[in-house]
Image (cartoon, rainbow, N blue to C red; front, side):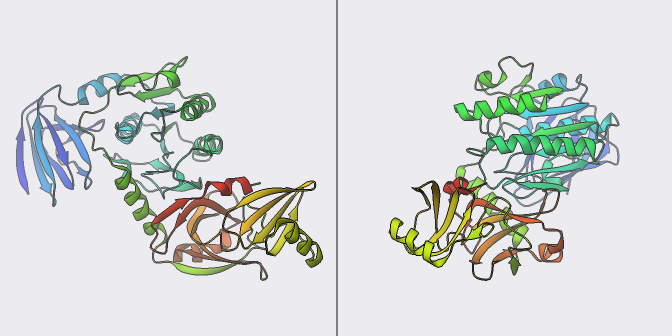
Length: 423
């Protein structure tokens, strides 16, 4: 524990874990002025820039690896962000966009705090499926903001929507629908005045541009906040009025491996220690895969189909103009036979696939990992948390994701071919 005296205008950069207690004076951090007797926390491995608004005295409790450094005016963007954001009325929908590691989460916390200070009821929607601060990886998560925060990670999701993947490529249209649903839920069910929507850093390719523009057009935000390094957001912002901020110069950049490790820790946090549940697919079917929901094909027809395909078929089900055949091959493929599409599903394709167990409103009850489908018994074995076991009666269906994990919850692959199976 140390006491630090700060002169008016002094700016410091703190890397956590740390706790700051204001003993005298006023300290500004993340849109909030902390006065005598008030305190705030800097999370481990997170950076926070603070400013003394007058002669101040603070008590610092620095944890292992924490750092404190005084910086020169102009070295950080704290004043520039404050001057551009403080005059805004944050009522309505605030949408934040930018590439990875430009401070979008910090901006979301700052605007949420500003709205809370005005007496608004505030919700945060985190739509970054790869690095979600509120809930599990692969989800859009939302929660209400009831007190000031320095980091979004201090909040816990009240509701989550399973998006099946850690990347929105190929599934961005559903993401737009579900982000819109999350925002409407916060407004209509919670009655909030302000919804701050944090987004992922997928920006640069054509599909990403189309996604972000569609999101803007759907949400119609009252404030569009863009954090831009150079000119990378121009195609997205064209035709839209936006507040453009520079990125903080010292945001901690995460490598691809850092992000992967963070996600894997997230899977474990929401599943470990796992319990294995046998779930009836007749009572709790797959949400997005029609396996076992169609009419099972007779043995004679199955043998004829197997001969045509040159594959052994253990089970086959017809659903409309598609036949789902469980085969002995290694690759999921779709073949045309007569007037039918035959989806050849490899036996044990399900092993390790991440799933979301959804309630009747389509919100996540919990994550799980598929272990085995027993077609003859119409049951599935899912490894999930003991909390989900207690809430199993709330589960309406099981949504199959495209992320495959090993037994230690490490990511093995993204099985994008599974999207071809979806109804």
